[in-house]
Amino acid sequence: MKPARLKEGDTIAIVSPASAIAAYVPRRLQRGIETLERMGFQVLVMPNATAVHSHTAGTIGERVQDLHMAFRDPEVKAIIATIGGFNSHQLLDELDYDLIRDNPKILLGYSDITALHAAIYAKTGLTTFLGPAILPQFGLLDGLDDYTEQSFKRTLMQTEPIGKIVASFEWTDEVLRWDVHDDRPKKRQPNAGMLIGRTGEGTGPILAGNCGTLLLLAGTSYMPSFEDVVLMLEDDGSETPETIDRYFTQLRHLGVYDEISALVIGRFESQVDFDPDFTLKDIILRATRGYDFPIVLDADFGHTDPVLTLPLGVTASVRVGDEIEIEIVDSAVN
Image (cartoon, rainbow, N blue to C red):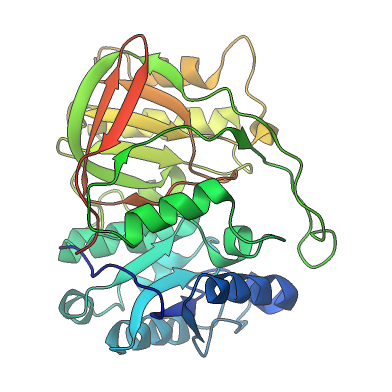
């Protein structure tokens, strides 16, 4: 089930399903709002988007209320998270999945927002979108990176097949403290492009998300099917090679590798500090030993910039030989 495409003049609702950071960085939040307005959208900041309840943006009830109000409002055509965090999965037992199914619209965010993407997709079949969030991307000094904006528009604002994914020319993982040091552009470096992990071919619906968050849903009804999917995973700089190794081993034990058609990994931040003698590729090849699906690393999504907008449930093909070819072969919106 695909949502309607986004058009200039449409209203976008801003929500905070997890972290309360938006309450503490008003300048950064305002930048994100202004970026959307420059792109031609109306912006509706939901009542609890800047709420604070301990380490979350409001109580469970307040965060659920904002999501329900946004899905119910006929003027709202898309919902974008301010940021991720740790606790979006607290909302899953309280969400009205019938309401969401009856009012399909774009839901965009990444990292911890994966819990919402996965559960909504599993419960309703609605295509949701792993992609830029208000504070980290829309709130950049000059707004969205060109690459990020082009992917956003190609995925959410047109009904033709999305087409081939091409690597960005530059990327950055520089951290500038929001509302303190973020008054200059980030330093960028050339992008060497996506890396071959293992050759092969695979086609199937995209299942994209944050690896650690997705694994929180193991054994629950909120975990989507992995059958024939192109699994696209990212994670953040707080992880270590050891924890990442653990995650990919858990995926093996869950039988995920028996089902997927391809594996694509988003670029990690430099601070994860993989051992040059035992790289991320080595970790993943060890975890997936005995399987032959294609593997791609360092794709443009995750906790570095720029980022792709990736639609859950939309068919993609991955072909890895001497070169890497990833293509999203259908449209993501109606």
